[in-house]
Length: 255
Image 1 (cartoon, one colour):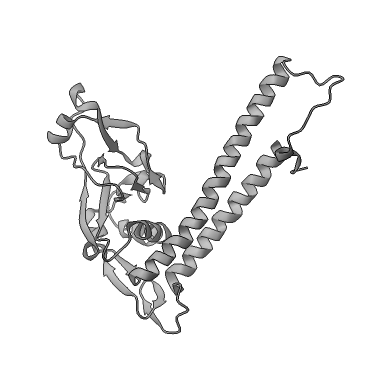
Image 2: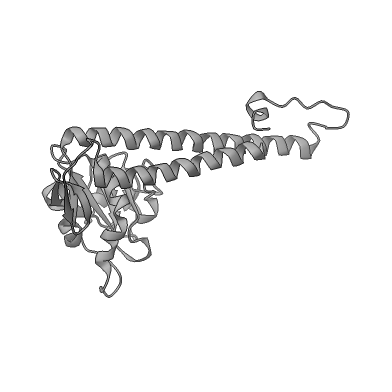
């Protein structure tokens, strides 16, 4: 089982490297076999792509707020409330804290729709990011970007910001507390390929993402299997003396 886990981890590592390479290629050369390119301050991209500040490809950009923590009636409701430690560089589908409608109404917190790209602006969490898998509010350390889907696919914007994270967080250089502001994010320029090409790019990246997810789930399943075997063996439920242990085919294939 340990060998099976190791092999699965190797596949995950290789696929993550593939994703990094694919993102580098996609966000510099596209998918259409271009011959003409333009130089930007962020690197070389196809000549027909546009470069626009985030505010021009967004329907809404805003930060959140924190309901008064001394008021119990503001917390434990049915509204998801995202903090920077909920951001996982992927789809945010669960959070640690919820707030009530009263907490939402009586604070600076606001609801953002599913698909919102979220970026952490402050301190040690600077650069953490995610994309909402549900409608949610967020605290003031998070900046939410709701894209204009007629210009920019929200998934692709999120992937681009992951790929260009160092360029975005570099905006904090020289600030007193190494923070970035909402206005800095609004001005940050992103690459905007044609919509048909955006769809192709999304399909490629999601295919790689699904492979990573499948193998990650398999690794967790193997770990559960190992824990069960250890429990059986160490408790004496299963004895190895004079016993032929049947190894499942799914494990035997790893040698």
